[in-house]
Image 1: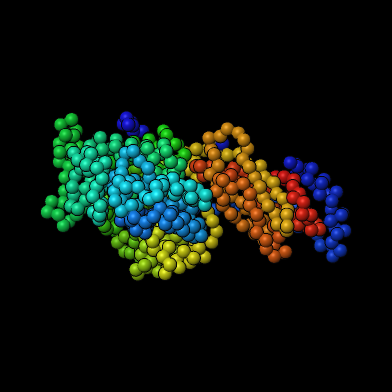
Image 2: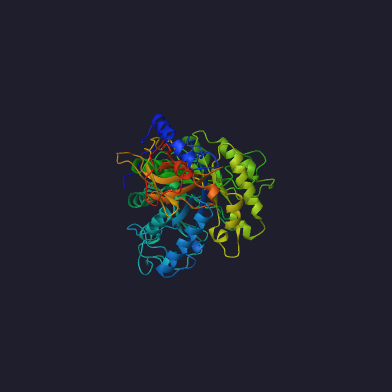
Length: 533
């Protein structure tokens, strides 16, 4: 791979005449004189926008699969159950770890199969299948986004159990590897290492229909104070840099390595699939005393991660800083840090903080996460959040999934739009409705025209007497059977909206169901309603 350089009826008058001709007959059929429901159509309410993500870690079998060596059918069943729970919670995105340590949870010609699938690095799941392909298909069928989560430079996890495969990078390119404590790490200071990790992302981007490319907080390793020499062993690559005429000190050089990698990554994704988002979840503290009074690890210095720069340059589409502290923490205030991150967002990208929902298994109560969600909603510039701890959220002994659905996620939400990726408004769908066996079946299709904004979701909104209800469906959906409620809550109207891959919504296409509801019981004849708006 060559190294990348940085950088879319009846008109209102006719409807009035039509209804005016029918009104005497309708009233005659209602001896009480009660007027039918109004037929004038109001616009459906705005669709709620909020990112509700979930990290699913595969390293060490933290979240999925539950253990190495499980039969493929069991792995698939576990993942389906996880996705179903995510839908039941009204989440809208899953961030799946697909490259934990220069290994893969997908078919790859570049890196060996992960040991977390079969138990042995280089051995595929049995019987063979492609976990990433399966995850994308099942997520999209449920209306969930699938973000592919990569670790760019970790080569060997400390708790890895199987021997590295012959095709693993520690065997094929040992000169790129730096041992740091019980970790093996690719050296980010080597240009060929950066090219290699970019080629891995490019391979997945080309072959899989992912919604985003996601990196976590690991660039250079976290400092290990137990080591006699806690300095990352990159002296040779730094000396080579200086021999090429480099003038940066070692700390600035490391940051420059990571900065150039992030810029190249963003260019790579934009050039290949401009609708795919790039997201990073940096350590929650950029530098101590930012904001004032905050204490903790200096990610800028220790991890060479200048996430504030990436935001200011627009080299990512969302930042999910890991704010894994309580609201009442004095030295790492969730609220103060959230506000600080939103204030760095000069390019108006998404800020979706990470929450340590895994702590619910320890000392935290559900009200802590509820409160943090409320803070993200009240903080200008923050439009969502991501939960850490899928295995805790979905534990059989933990009812948080139902609790949060009833208290924080009382209605579904779309992922916020990313108009800087593509502003094209998709065309409105062609909508019809048929009445059969006492229920309305709404159907739709997208117009057959060329567009750079294919539909990724459908939003169906149903108007009853006092309110609208919203349902979000996947792109593959073409119909919706309106649920039957009490007679007094018969549906009066339905609106269907298409949403593009970048989150841009079409104009809602609205049908009135009031005409049929106000007259005698409709015949079971699949009668099509006229389009009215």
